[in-house]
Length: 177
Image 1 (cartoon, rainbow, N blue to C red):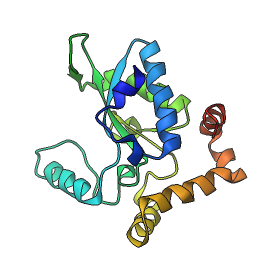
Image 2 (tube, rainbow, N blue to C red):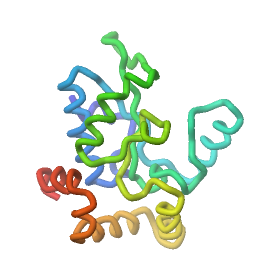
Image 3 (cartoon, one colour):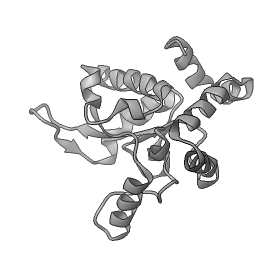
Image 4 (cartoon, helix red, strand yellow):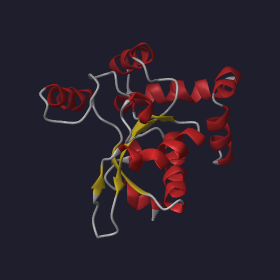
């Protein structure tokens, strides 16, 4: 059931530890009676630029500039709250609909976008600001998203990262990472 929640997203283009934690996250939300459907995972720099253009033109939702979104590195998901039991997704975009998502994301050690005005958004910690994301963009431009993930794999091994991210470290250890 939980994997069906992610059918709109190519999970192979999202960092595997994030996918694993997100699967648990939405299962916990479901256990609390709230259903979320993933609508975005990875976005290319070109897709991000187009979303930003639409946002600035008043024709789309909030979107960062290309390279300044964790989506561009497979480090984020956007969800929609399914606000009704009828077949298909009945989007509920009201902020309170994302309270459970925020609580469970935070409990798992992820960053909830509600902290910065994007309640449907959940992402990997440590790469939120432009300053934090810029080295990832440089790495992608010189190599690939896989190189970013290799960097994150190395970061996760460090005692400093584990100390700074105790909840996520515990969740990843429980999941076998």
